[in-house]
Length: 204
Image 1 (cartoon, helix red, strand yellow):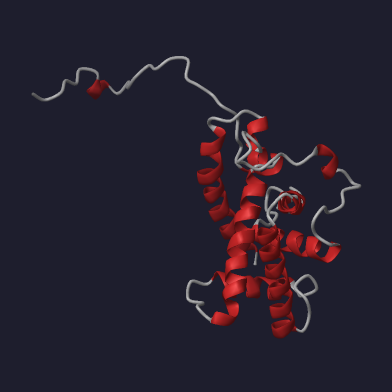
Image 2: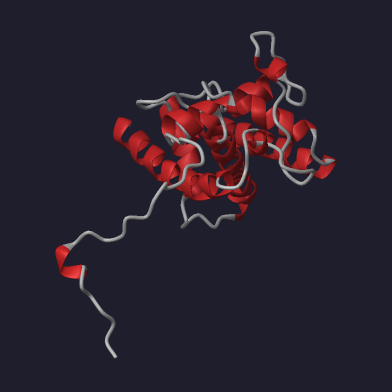
C-alpha cells in the first residue's frame, strides 16, 4: 500500500507542478487564490481555526471529502490533503458556486456512499482503507465504461481536480511539497562555458 501511495503522490506532484507553478509565475501572494473575479477567492483565515465549521457540507459530507482528499493526496514524507485542510477549501469554494455545481457535487457524494454500501455494506467513511482504495481504483480505471459507475467516474475526476488544486495552493503543498521559492531572476547571463563552444560560429 505504501508504494502505491508514493507512486500516486509522485504523479500528483508532477501534475501539481504543471498546473500550479505556471500560475505562480505571474501572481503575487494574494493572487495565489484570487487575482480577479474569475478566480477562486482566498479562504478566510478565521475559517482555518480550530473552531472551523463547514459553510456548505454537513458533518458527514465534510468527513467524506476529507477522507477522499487524503486518499488522493496521502501523507508521505510531507503532510497530506487532510493536514493541508483541502476539505475546508473545497467546502468554502462550493459555498460560493452555482446551485447546479453544488447539486452535482452532493450527488457525487451520495453516489460514493451508495456504491460503498453495495460493495462493502457500509458508507465510504466507515469502510476500510483497502475497500476505499478499491472503489476509487474502479472509478479511475480507463477500462471502466459501465453506465452504473458514470456518476462516480465523473465525480472522482471533479474531486481529484479540486483536491490537487487545493493542496498545491496551500502552504503545505506549495512550500513543503513543491518547494516553491517564489519568483526569481538571474542577475547575469554568463553564457555557455564549454571550451568546445567558445569559438563556435554558425555555418554559412
